[in-house]
Every structure is written in structure tokens, then in C-alpha cells.
Image (cartoon, rainbow, N blue to C red):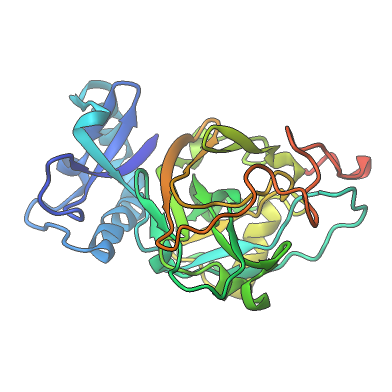
Length: 325
């Protein structure tokens, strides 16, 4: 099932969010099943609670939601505004790199950083580049994100599915100093500007995805294909990510872990561009870019430090690591 948050296109408040089911016919309003009719969300935090509550009660609500998806009236997509399905996650943990790339032959240690949850935006929103000149440039990273159901703590690799509610698409917008070095050499700071975490368009429940390490990720900048890779090329696959992060911290319902990216195909983002991500079997969405300073960098795939492959990400993992288990 594909779960969304939405408002009618003419709603007076952006955050008067309703839960919905994304179908081939449009969006089916699920608020009659899952939302207290006396409560109207008025903020991003309220909208997050709508989805978190749905995650927590999903098992008991699933039969009614499935019936709605089959027979409920669907609103056409041009009659609704899709919000980020998780407007303010309690935590956004991001894997550093985590893909075989540039002909490396040993897996790097699994490592993560936290990204500012207030940076989340959704379909049709705008990435606002900061209006000061210290960062050198800004780049995109397209990633698969895990949506947790919790509380999840010390989950083993064998039981990783117990902690994962579903999956969504994630853009990790990043301020760079030079080459691929994050601004001030700090992953949290250079990746946490407001609007630097586009997320959406839906949460696909885990039962719809047989293997999250068998998904096709693509990303376009103004129609030019940049990222184009399979998630089976992760250095550390999803079960290991789940075990690692829940060893360190408790993951609560609606928390997010972005699984990293293959940096080949990396490029700059700048004023006026349209960014699109698609993860096949999950969905696709676009955001715009606005730069009040109208700065310009080279257009196209960045061919400097690290990024080497223009048209499609080539597999660099050693043959011994093809099977991820």
C-alpha cells in the first residue's frame, strides 16, 4: 500500500493534512478510517503525528484501508497537494556513502550522521539555497530511505523486518566546500540547511517490497539523468543498516534512515532547475531549486574528484560481494 499525506488543492492551510492511499486512480481519503474527525492538524509536527499514528495502528487498520483502496472514491492528483509523507521525523539518520564506487576493493566501515528534521520538504516544494557565500556549491544525492516502526532497539540482522514499516524516496541536498568535501568538513552542518531533505511522494509499506536491496534508483536534473543505480550495490545492505542504527539509538515510529548513495553521477544544483527522483516500485516526485544569489556552477555531471561515470553507474563491487544475503 502507498500511504500519503495530502490536502485538497484549495485548502486554506498547508498543514490541514489528511492521510490517504495513493492508487492508480488518484488519492483515496483515508481519514475516515484513521483520523479523529475532531482533530485538525495545524502544523508540520501535527501532520507528522497523523502519519505516525497510522504507522502505529496500521496492522489493525489494514483491512479497512485495503477495502478503501479497492472501493473508495479517488481524488485526481491535480485536485490534491501531496505533502511530505513524514513532515517532521523525530530522527533522520543518513548512511555515509555506502555504495561500491570508483573501483574500490574493500568496504568502508558503516557510518552515519543525523540530518536536520526541519529540512524536510515534499513534492512540488522548493529547495532554497542559502543566501550567503561561504559554501562553495550545492549538490544532489538520491537515496532509498527506510521508515521505521518502533520503538526499535537492538534489532538483529535476522529480524530486521520487525523494525521497518516501509520505504520512501529521499534527496540529500548537500553544501560542498570543494570536490566532494562537505561544507566545513561536517556532514551534519553541510546537509542540514532548511529545505535540504526532500522526501516523498509516499510511504510504500514493507509488504509491497520483497527485497529493498533490489530496487532501481534514478535521478534527473532538468531532464538529464544523473544517478542511475541498483540498491544491491550497497556496501552494507538494509539488514545490516537496521541492526547498526538500532544498536546505537532507539528508532521510533516515523523515524527515517537514508541508505546512502552512489556518488557517480553527482552534479551541482542551481537556480531554476527541476530535480526529479524515482525509485521504481516506490514512486517519483519533483522539486524546484531557487537561489536568491543566482550563482552558477558547471552544468551536467561533475567530472572532478570522485565522480567518474556519466551515463549510468557501473558496478564496482568485488565479485565476492555480489550476494548480500
